[in-house]
Image 1 (cartoon, one colour):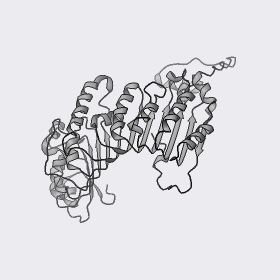
Image 2 (cartoon, rainbow, N blue to C red):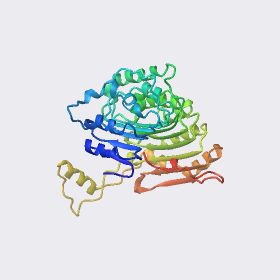
Image 3 (cartoon, rainbow, N blue to C red):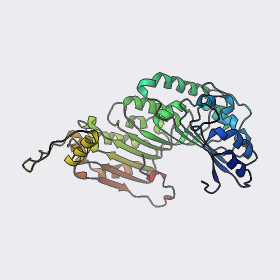
Image 4 (cartoon, helix red, strand yellow):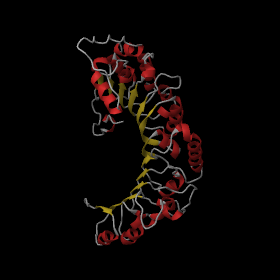
Amino acid sequence: MVSGDVIPVISPPFATAVAQLTSLRHVVISNVGHLSCFLRTVQSKPLRSISLSWLTYDEGMEPHEVQKVEYHPVALLSQWTSTLESLAGNAWFTLLELPVFPHTVYPKMRKLRIDWDDHPLVAPYIRAYLNLEWIDFRAGDVFNWENDEETLREHHELNVRSQSIAGTRWQELERVDGCLIDFYILGLVCPISRVNLRTSIRSEHDLEILSEVLTYAQPKELKIAAQILHTDHSFSELLRTAAGSRLENLLLHIDLSTSDRKVDIAAALERLGAALRVCPLRRLRLCVRAGGIDPTPLPRRSRAASLRRSGGEMPQATASDPPPPPIPLNLAERSLQAFDIAAYSRELGSAIASLTDAVFVIAGLRNDEIMISYIPPRAGVDQQDERTYEWEL
């Protein structure tokens, strides 16, 4: 398949044909078995972006062979130091010891995407990609806190220590996307303007990790989902620290669960509002998803479908079966139903002078009730930047 000037290279004959192209700028290499042939073919092309997957091997190459100095991205692609702007690597497992490429610099490199490298070392990238703006990192489902905490901590500390050496710290990154565990593995110690966390904050341990990440990053824009709102070490308290000192745009999803049924959620939201007042917010998106606190059993049809999928059986209902009695509202539900979301938004709008517009949503209440309130954009606000309007976590 060929789309514009993006060429998926799959065979040496095709690579030879590619050599005849005069305007080649972007390539996708899906078979590293033909990598050397391809590199020789396009070495004179001023490539701007390269995507290279190490998932497909042939010619006798084994995955562990990737972990050599010559296969590190900084070294392997050094023919394009003057032109390369974007690099994506899939299953590109790099060295477990810090390599040094003292004279290899990519001044135009702006975006680095890494899919599935469980032990990335950031120092070589920092030295080579001095002007990098955007990192999109996905370690993959290879780690979890319970089984791998010691390994994660050791790798995190190695990356943090390596950035204490002169010339091995980015001044600031524009954007980093990843799960919380990805941020922890990278151990970045520089400011990050835009932080996009793909996974939800589920425990106090997560909050401790998040605190370290955001204290270093001090983001201007943060996209995050959290299930921890009411504990002593809550997200609200984190916003009062250096982590929230530069925060201008916040998109926050609060996912309530069964453990929140005895919690005064309205009081927790008031504490969150008090913390938001100390941030230099411009735009705010706050969505509370309350389905987890509803104790009402699933409708019979949904339960029957679930049982069929699991191979179970469900007794047949008869016309004489009475409807189940309604379950009383729990504390969390009562507090949310009594919560004046319009007054909440007005008070925040008045208290935060920098706030230009906001949206507040409480969804998932019984009877599918949705509560919404807006602070409309103020006159003169630039509406071209729509990034914080995306409900996408």
